[in-house]
Image 1 (tube, one colour):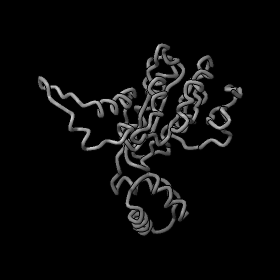
Image 2: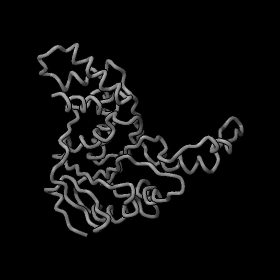
Image 3: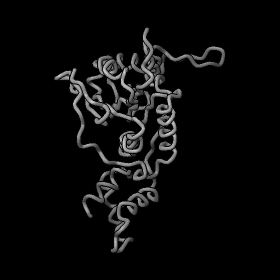
Image 4: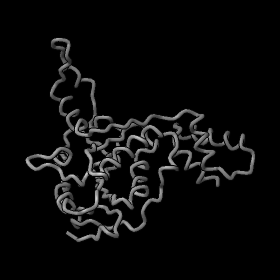
Length: 252
């Protein structure tokens, strides 16, 4: 495996075809203060990350919910905030999770603290590529290294598809709900993330506040700007920080 100088490299991406980590030189410059409407999630994730960097117990994190609500941006923004405190980040595609043990082995002895970033993480019926992820989250015979956490974003709360027939096996015994094997398997994966952060669609007031943030220096008619922003969001069927940014890119 190619050796990376983590004293100077802030982030890398795993390339399964070559079996190597490739340094990321053009890092997304997104910063925490640019992310609006997610103050609760931001505070919780920062606190968890600060505990991690301080050598205190910290949790793997699953950020789940509606598309375009800032899940991935929030994770990426941590790098700009905590890079000088030794935080490093490695992005691993869902399809490459089978290589996770090798990736973790390559960094477990490093002095820096690493977040393994899995973006848009979800699995379909019959897939078993999440099994290495289970081991990395809680370990097997060998405990996970103390300098590695996994932060993942997903549109699914339990990462795996949930079907109505899965509930047919659920039963109540002594007032306690016992799920069937299908649901237990799905919940067992997401349960390994100790920190769950949920993201929901924003309302129109919050959406326009984000638009105003992007158009802080706008000298034109702001009422007309808001009307155009609302029509732009209606054309996409969703209000989100991502849509506000796309509107800014199309008009500024």
